[in-house]
Image 1: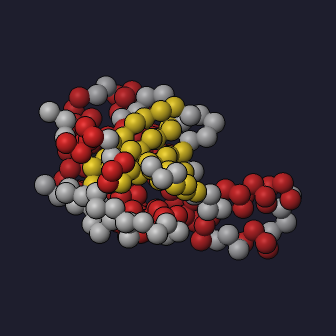
Image 2: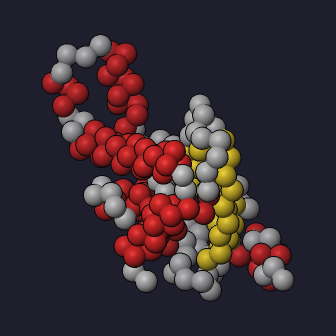
Length: 200
């Protein structure tokens, strides 16, 4: 089944199994997600426009701060923590959003670049993702996380991101004031024993 077919299946499932109010809410969320991605993409591509406009210093600062690369990382000898100042869209928005290519490459590049300062290599990794969403009810399994895992591979700390090398898990939390993601990368000896052996 292709990606497009899987998305059609998800939409059909909702259409057949949800009431009108629920379907309208889902459509609204999709629209807001598309708008968020397009707005950020266009703002990032036209940031030079700010200098040609007559804006208050306070507004200009807020505008520039919103577009800054605020991704950070730290390594304490046990795990690498990456702070991502945004949350990814849901997977069903991903394949229908024309801005998806831009964001896939952006998130890959930012993940890769934030890890480039570490002269380390792992044979295997376990990645724990914490998604701090601004809404109190959402499915973490619908979040589009592939670019982050691709970026980890591209950074060179692992040679590939296939199933023999990468295991991952995800946790959903609520944060209305500061929606963001945190990625925790555990390598080799730091991987919890029950993860290395598998859960039976």
